[in-house]
Length: 434
Image (cartoon, rainbow, N blue to C red):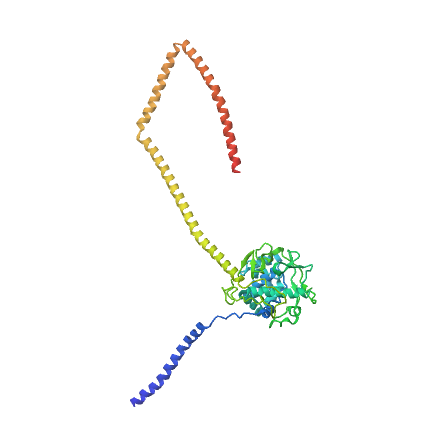
């Protein structure tokens, strides 16, 4: 009977223990699985894929292109800025600008507040915008070459030409630039990219062509939104004029300096330009005939490294400067305190010494008083004696008066120029301090 009970107990215990152990191992296995999950890898794009990706922004003004490329590395901020703008679209431009400036967004995102239709297009096409950001961060030179390739084809087909709204120019290395005719007013082009470039590539999967703004008439080529005055945004350093593409370097300039996105959501964060492959360096599918790439492979990486070097130097200088300033201030304060204490101590000693002298020698003071009285009495006696000999003192007095008069002249003439000299010197000092 006892044996049967032991067998029964063992039969119950073993499955229970096995179940308990398995439950304990499941979380550990999950943690191991999560720890081993690799970060998503960036897949390099070829020329045709890059053409397809940049087509919706290729014909925008240069400065706006620079803002869009940098802004697209922050898809979460694009969504937040678009929602904020929809809520504040009726504010006067100056208030909108100030409100945007107060937000914790990247400068490129703040700058896109100036262009509601552009920001709305990015927000409505989040997958495309995020891929554009990843491509720009990893293949910046290839992306900018793709934009130039699209412009070259549009120019050859007479779609991209100078208009009253913007100037199209070909500059060094065959780079095509687009800039507003009036720097204070920007016209954003509106076009269907899949119609402009025909059958060169398929539309980007899922891309939504936003309806044209009110008043825009769409034709075969480009149409333009109403001019956007930039005056309300001119007081902020993130405005339209602060941005520019560095076409030959494959980067973006902000305030005249290379600007590298610090977004942590892009793939391969911290390795800007790490996948540039020279997709447009040679002819082939997606590369227009006779096209010459302006941005060379590796140029963006070099610029990014130089930018990181400058940032590290500035940070190091700031770290060394702060302790030095603190030490100098501490020394100055300590010296001032020491000097003040020394002056106070000396003053106290002088006061104590004077008090001690007066208290310790009352007899000497009395003696001096008595001596003075005795001298006065002696002088009185001398005067009485002089009265007995009036003739001689009279002659003596006249002689003394003559001597005093003779001496007074030179002294007076010396005194007057000295006073004038002091007055002149004092006036010169005041002028010098003004």
